[in-house]
Length: 245
Image (cartoon, rainbow, N blue to C red; front, side, top):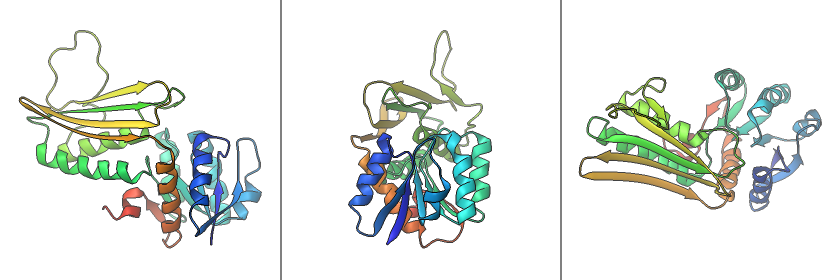
């Protein structure tokens, strides 16, 4: 039986992870945690932590996990480069799954996007990413959208710093051929929608994933925790868990 600690238990994702774990007979939610509470006691009692909270909590979580050799499944987004580097450093001694999205469908979208970009390129096709989430989401673009941008840039040779346009306004002139457009929408209670567009003269390909329940992400995180229980120290993502690499 894999013993889990679910952080952010009062939040939407914390509750979804708890529900997903309850449906999996091989795991037990042995402890929970919320902002402002002690972390040392609950993390000492478990095998793995599933964390969907805020990026500012990650340093404390990494330190506690290192002290107790506890595996981590991190679904929190919005990390800056220093925080990402801290996760990479911690993964030298801990098994960590760090992914922007734990949905099987979204990870299939990542795989399809890579192959479509490889086939279509960015010479004749113009690349755009559109994402929408609920009004409470605090980071933009979403972690999933950032991963899609990384995939498109990697496969087409574009630069994340120089070729990504976050929205457009004013007299912007003709669209540069290597540009990747990024558009963020916020409103209502949308769980998560992501579309990658490949637009050329005479044709357009759209790859879209729409989530209507957080249980998709929560169930994937529980699956990742089970997979991680048999892995050596290292930094993994959901593509590793699903065998898509």
